Image (cartoon, rainbow, N blue to C red; front, side, top):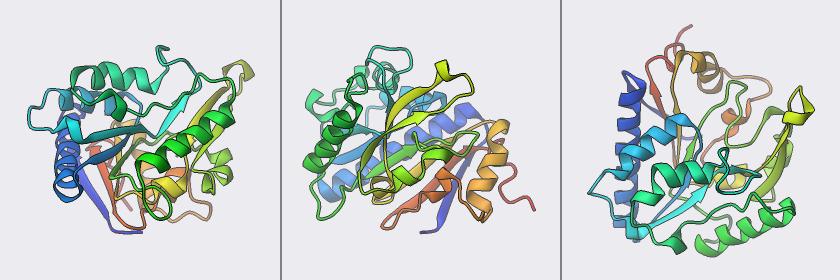
Length: 247
């Protein structure tokens, strides 16, 4: 794994500003080098605030963006739980990214395996590259159980590949609360030119320490994200990173 780069912010609001700036700078560098920028967006409240700020910027060449998603719940795109809906309301509806450059995971389809295969085909078609597709930036969160995207501790094996997109079942004590999702797998995440985790709040401090500062016999899902060609970045507020180097 390449070195971990850590950028801290004093508050959750400052973290949103920092993340928006980081995304904009990463996009500009990719466009300057390769003529376009490909990003896999994350769901969650922390990324949402970054997207809101990003949408207000006037220094972004949106026409060169290709937007993907790290994971999606198996719900229609207008559903309150949809990552696409969140990203659309916070960012995509407010910026001139060509509609053909927004690549949504069709989580509402009854045949989840076919939806996963079609999204893999989309990734390979848009991100033409020998071997696995290469995204310029993957944005990820960290759950309190150490999951990232929709790779949970009990489904790590299926996320190791060779499939680039897989359906997974998020288990719950109440079986009625179980939920199917579609997620990118490690071959895609680890092929990216940059992977950035966004996390905030004191409640995340213990899991941030476990993921980034503790060598565990069985690594948590987020700790298995190890970019082979690019950078690993942690964007966190002071509360979330408070225990990171605490002995």
